[in-house]
Length: 327
Image (cartoon, rainbow, N blue to C red; front, top):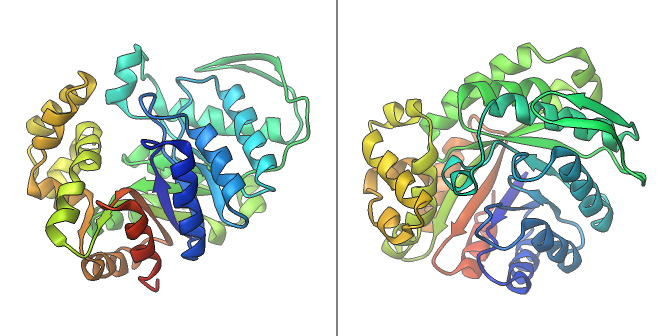
């Protein structure tokens, strides 16, 4: 898979235009990111489905805290139906910094994601659900036929990454540096050794897709590309687990301050606090040649790559540049 992430910061019709550009650039998939303070990802994905013919699409990632997991399963099935079977369900625990604005208790994220995945699959198979875990459902079901949809888990820490390899069809690993991707590859290998036989029967171990979900900012001007990388790097740094900071010798206290600024809506301060070392660790930022070299190294360990927003100072140009990398 060679895909991109689109963040619905701009009007939905503009996001659909970017999607059409991505399909023309022969990319394989589009994921729409989810934050409550941007436009709705499923509405954006519906517009993307209408603007494209063949490209796969889905949330990257939605979280099962803001919306009940049964409702999420139905939304995903509806999108898949609208897109003619092109849906991919990207689900993860969500961004702690923005969920805090909603008073969401971000407890037991691994269990919540795993239970969401299992319940969604049963609903898509036509079952009615009784569930009592991190959420409850009582005789819940879909009143329409749905397709079995691939599930990709958004992950960054070791436990979620292993869980994805054990139970999901793929992992969207939030990492942009070869050091992180190599570490994640070991966690994926650990999870695959524990993969239940029913999962092997469904997709086969060889079919598991280890996706590097890598923030990218590409432009012909290196400095412009790196400056445009500040917003996504701030969000990544503000919610990254402690081992990531140790791996890159980054200032965890500064990252915590960035996360606090994001939670308070002080985005300008958060973006300004991003250091060059954080950009190097958390984003593929630079010219097409720089990005291509880094991607080649990443794909030594990962199966696929999704280029995460912002993509570059000029989004449409960035999509075309990424399509021209010849990967």
